[in-house]
Length: 201
Image (cartoon, rainbow, N blue to C red; front, side, top):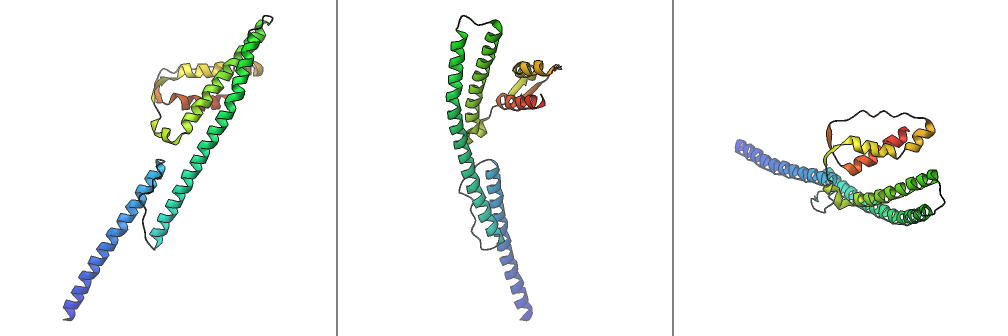
């Protein structure tokens, strides 16, 4: 009788342990999926576990983090959108005034060249603002396009924008020809490379 009781108790214990471990592993897998969703900027309200232990506390912490992160990203998107709209107006005014100045008859070639540079930079800034607005949209983060690009043309175009710094600081720039093509997002690469070149100058 005692042996039968012990065997019965062990069997029940094994069954209960198996059920408990299976439930624990299932909840851990839910937390893992939730973490992967957050890393992919997917803040759905699924994968919520209900437990009154440390795993449950961890689940609540991850859910709270998800809500706060989603809210912060939305606020950042709104801020970038508002700032971008505010910047468009002065850039448009600068462009218009420069075009008026360029239409004047009595301007020398040096002044005309300076006006052209200002106009070119204003157009570039306007394009940059529009790209920034697109890149800031959360839903577009998964739609970033990559393609094979030769970097020579991009680098040369960026360097042309800083001719005045080269002249002012008496710099000599040597560009090694890059024959390979690289699989990149051109817009993001231009922004990054532009920052690197300007900072180095």
